[in-house]
Image 1 (tube, rainbow, N blue to C red):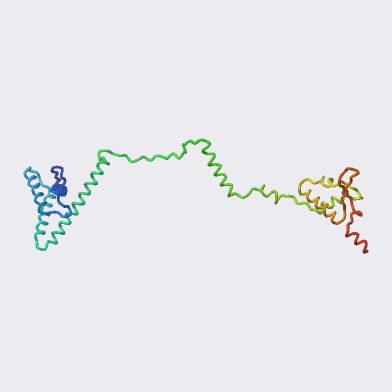
Image 2: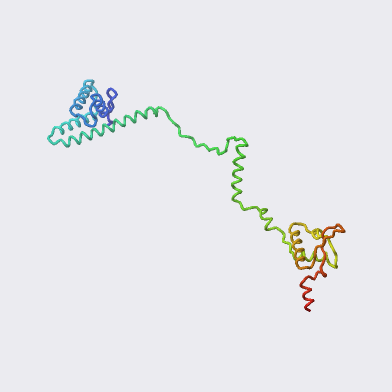
Length: 249
């Protein structure tokens, strides 16, 4: 059997009617005066009968419930009545909160409209913003600079250490001696004519120093000819070691 719903003066159900009576008579919802509330409730029930309205079963159930609570409160030990009254108060408090929530949602949601679910549209992943060149070049240069810090040093950074040609001083000693062989005299600067880089210049200079130290060549100042300092062999270029050997031999 279909459940009968009843609405009287904007009251929906017995809890709505009880809540209206509590607010109208300024009763404490946490400590309800059951006798006064029952009297007001029964008055509304009589009004419904006078208007020949069919009373729903839930209203009759509430009336019998109020009578039961009032009867239990009249007993010497009314612990049961207190428990029933607290249970009714809890239901009324929850119903009041539900009404407040429903009122708030009614202003936000309209049940007369239909909202279609969002269609599945393929996202456009293209970047469509436009930036001036100056705003892009600065971050690019900054990123490139940070990336270079993690790279190993370039090969050119070691060229002065690793790739420098090593020139033997001994080979330059032979070269200087060949230029002075058979008693020739050469200008000091001419021994550096064959040097192509700094390594050869340094090796040639060290070769001249070694020959002078070994007394195999000497440097003369030629003031008459105006050719500057000249190199020549000493005793055929044998040096101190050869002369000592010949003397003791």
